[in-house]
Every structure is written in C-alpha cells, then in structure tokens.
Image 1 (cartoon, helix red, strand yellow):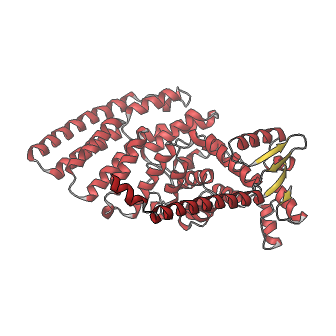
Image 2: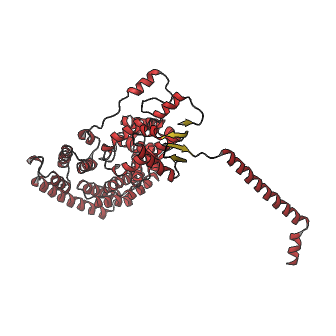
Length: 453
C-alpha cells in the first residue's frame, strides 16, 4: 500500500492493520495505546428479556415481547417473553390480544398460563358497561353543546378503544377531538394521541402528518413534547428508509425525553437508531460534528456503550473492532420491532462506507491486508470492491493477479490543460461577440433595419 504523501513504513503498517492491533490514529501516550489494545469487545450475550421489557410500558411493551417471541430461535427466550406478555395483559383489558398470547403459549407454561375464561368474561362485561356509560355521557354533552366536555368525551372513547385493542376506532375518536379543541395544548394532546395509535398501527404516513400539525403550534410545545415529536418523526423516516432524515431527527432529541415516552421508545433506542442511521448516511465531517461532538446525543450514547464505541471506531478507522461490534449487536437488533427490517440494509451501507473510507487516502492497497482488516476472504472482498467500482463509489481498478487495488486518480496536469483550453475558447467567443456588437453599432445597422420596417 503506497501512501500519496510518502508516509513512513511504520505508520503505513499501522494503517494496514486499521484497528486489528488496536492502534489509535494518533496516540498521545503509550498508556492510551495500551488501554486501546486491552479494551474488551462485547460478546454476543443473550438478550435480558426482563431488563429489555422494563424499558417500555403500555401496549408497546406487550407488542415488543410478542414480536421477540415470534422472531427468536431460543425456545427458552420465547416462553419467557410470552410469560411476561401474559402477565402484562392480565393487568389490562385487551382480551383479544390475551387470547392470542394464550394460543401462542399453547400450554407450554403449565395450567397457570392457560385461557382464563372467567377473567375474559368479566373484563368484556365491564367493557360493555363502560362503553354504554361513555356513549350516554357523550350524547348528553352533544345536547348541551359544551365543547370542552365533548372533546373530553371523545378523548375518553379513544382511551377506551386503545385499552381494548381497537386501534382504528381509537384513532377516529382522538381525531374527532380536533373540532372541539379550544387551546393549543389541546391540539398538541390530540396530535400526540393520534401519533401513538398510528405508530401502533404501522401507519407512519399519519405519524408524519400529525407531527407536522403539532409543530405548527410551537408556542404550546414544551421540551418533552418536542423530544417526543422528534422521536416519532425519526421512526417515520426510518420506516420510509430515509436514513439520513431519521438520523437527524434522532440526533435532535433532547435530554428532556428521559423515560417519558416509554409507551413508544426508550432512550437506548434513540441512541441505537440514531447512531446506526448516522453511520450509514453521514460523511466523516457530519459524523464528527453532529454525532461525536453532539453533547445531547452523547448522553444517549452513554446508555448503549457498544454503539458509542463502534461509532468512535468507525471514525478512527478501526474497522475490525467496529465490524466486531456490529456483528455482536446484530442478533439483538433483529429482535427489535422497528429496526429489524433495516438491519441488513444499514449494515451493508456502513460496510460499504468503511471500504470506501479505507481506500480513499492511498494510491494502491494490498487486498490481502485489507481482507484481514475487514475479517473477510480476498475473493469476497474483491466482489465487494467490484460492486463499489461499478457503482462509481470507488475510483479504482483491480489487479486480480497480484491482488492489488490501484486508485484511479485524475491526471491533474491534463485536467489543468483542459481547463485552460476551455477558458481560452470561451474568451475567444466573448471577444468575437463583442466585436460584432461594436461593428453593428458603428454602422447603425439596427437603426437602418428599423427604418425599413
């Protein structure tokens, strides 16, 4: 690998390793280098379901547990997730979802986790009584034309339907409160309720719409509400595969979020989603300015040290360590209800950016050393590089026999000559045009032409 600026051989060898030996870009002391070498790589530990579930509340906690059970290959984890979902549902009123979980358990957890027909009948009976009461109250409010009472009546209906799993009816009820909102705070409440239900239904077009509506009343937005709206917008962009926009929204989330939005997202998710989307879509400058130097986002990254370390490793060109972190995180990310569909795409984009960033400073790269740095075979690396060259993301050519990648840098001398010739031609054209206009004016051609007309 030959450096463009003739770097010393020892430095070049460190660049070859690119993180394999844990050598930092510019270590300030031997101590920092030692710490770097001895820093442990996370192991692919099994997800702690109890700790994971504790991050969330409400319906999303149950849905995440069910999703985990459906997508996990470990039968012990499946049963643990279903057991926790069963216990959580018994605290609520959603009998339909309760029956679905019992069906998934299929008697594997013993008689204590079977269909509780008595409990279901009691909850359904109370639900019918509650619904009748809400309808009579709402009809009375309509008769009296009390806007605030009508708004609260529809809001209560929305809460009722949401608790019982009727998300479509809940969404309609929340949206109907809009006509009876008398203050900006009421509008914000309506938007946040509509966003919550839309996320649960997977209707992210509605999420984007109601985030925009809420942002049109900035005077009523407090910092926690702003943080919630940015999280919701980030999830909508993530679902639409607009990773750069998603990263920007997650990076703008303030520390005021705390655990206040646990019915949708945890602070750890903000760090994970924002960090991975930023790695996949930001260039080095943006990564430094908007992620690594972002004080607010740094607080979120502290909650997920693995993501923090892989971002720092990527920026520092320690690709072996970075890819190790990504590999260890993958199994748990595949069990996440929002990001599981995007893991492969994000990982491919991050890896492609790492390959591009690795080759950028050099005139030639030994593909054997590069394959070692990326923990892959030379043949596999060659295919990846071929794809990037074909897509015009790397300006280079491959010597397949000697396994060397040669950068195809522009001929600066030839390019300068071409620019000079182009400038000369443009100057010549401008001078000729100027002389023509001067001759036309000198001989009064325009005046004579106008007289003939």
